[in-house]
Image 1 (tube, helix red, strand yellow):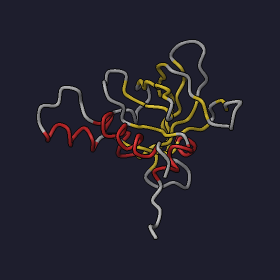
Image 2 (tube, helix red, strand yellow; image 1 turned 60 degrees about the vertical axis):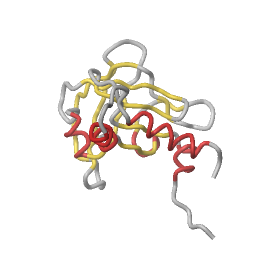
Image 3 (tube, helix red, strand yellow; image 1 turned 30 degrees about the vertical axis):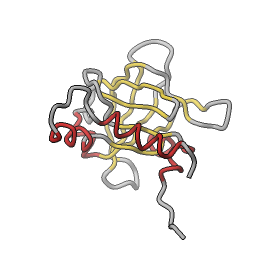
Image 4 (cartoon, one colour; image 1 turned 135 degrees about the vertical axis):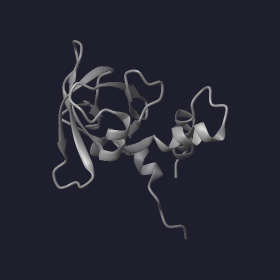
Length: 150
């Protein structure tokens, strides 16, 4: 385990807790609405970085143009996202169907904000202050994988 794993776990907890939470209930509800996934499993059709082939998503607002069941991935949806502004490329975001429906992004016309971070990409509804999905870069995600202790 590298030094990134404790940082990632702390980061996930900090991002999941609302800044103005005054009760344990609201903090737990916020944590339950957060999801963490691998960037390589969540994003397709985006440009590749010149170093290491890591997928890149430009910061900005994206509009859902199509919602489809992910082929051979039960319980997953694919959101086809088109940039709302200039300078970004369209891509497909694959995520848990229940999460997408709960967050209100499983519909054509929904707006999703992509926020690249050093550890991956945070996805949020444009009107939300907290991300609903953290798509972690593979190197970061591998630090979270469960390993048998000896």
